[in-house]
Length: 251
Image: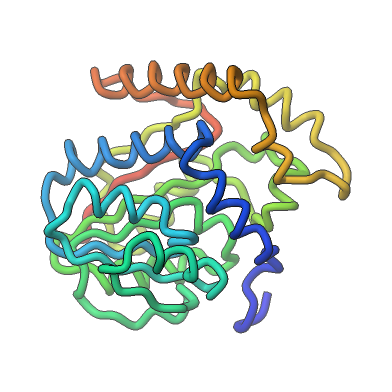
């Protein structure tokens, strides 16, 4: 991986992603989990940076929930920022490699949602994020979980790794954070996810095919994720799941 292109991410994917995110169960469910954490475990903030903001789907939801916050988005690929700027014209966007982030004590909250798994130098990025946060600032991240779920889906998505909880917690602590909340999610669907990943083999796998599911299946999967969020809200945390969420505070 070189400094000009951290992953061979297919930039042509941004357009279909922008078209699919608002109606696809996984993106909708992840947004609900993220907003619940922001509203119930962080409460308020003035400045928010999303690193690897892609097409701006998450940042748009943050804008709707926190209309008075000053929002920033960074993304390695200009192709993604084209859509992000259209979605949130009031936010400030920068094309940036997260390994080169030089901001110092600027943001109250930084989010990185399914970003770190694309970067070999994840420890360096975490240290950059810690420096960029204000005193006692918060870091909210999600990553794909469990190395045994590795499949062609990860390869086609240009992932460098899937995380274990122990690895992520260790790296975040080493970067200068205190862990405040950790849970897996996409947990109730983990058996189905395992079966799907087991069948996704070969270099001819099409990652965009995951969006081509029937409306009834899409609604069913979203309903299951809604149940999972209800369980999170009553205090249940999941030890296993397709994804891992972590909230930490700078120390």
